[in-house]
Image (tube, rainbow, N blue to C red):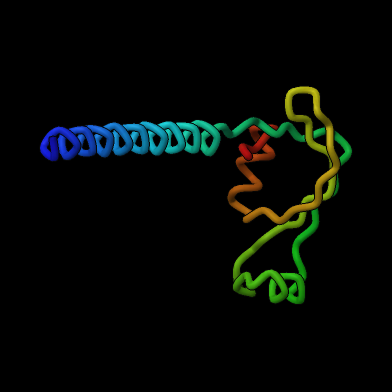
Length: 104
């Protein structure tokens, strides 16, 4: 009788462990799907670009010697237009400007 209950308990433990492993796998897969879902953010004409000041770089903890620009304007992500203000590293900005979009 004791052996039967031990076997039953062992079986229940295995079932619980398998369920937990399946749930963890599902969570990991969902995180990968959502984290990798980057979308094109198209630049809307009429934006303004200026070089970041030393003070702005210091506040953002960016090395002063690096060249960064500040983008103020609208972006269009699949019809959802929003106004943003964000920094770009100068090389990234050149690529973004030539392509007309950035990934975010």
